[in-house]
Image (cartoon, rainbow, N blue to C red; front, side, top):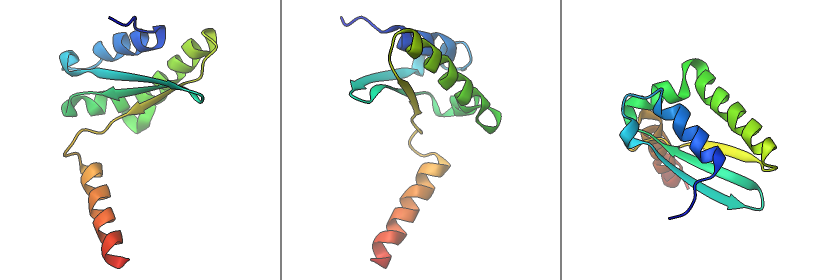
Length: 103
């Protein structure tokens, strides 16, 4: 089994303690020439806690990851994946359909 990195462990620890469905947390870690990308997936009901009021929690998570990355000489980015069926995802899909119709 692959060893999880410090940035992924810290993100998991923090997020598990703020959500109502910690068993649904999934974190994918990708490393490339740009640095480390952590993709966070949570239960749809937990999106509000993860993003926070006016994005304050997501900003705090990114700050923590930036500090961990600096300590390990890596650039760490966080992407919070929207769950299927969310309002924004539906709006983006509708916008794409309209664009396709307008050529």
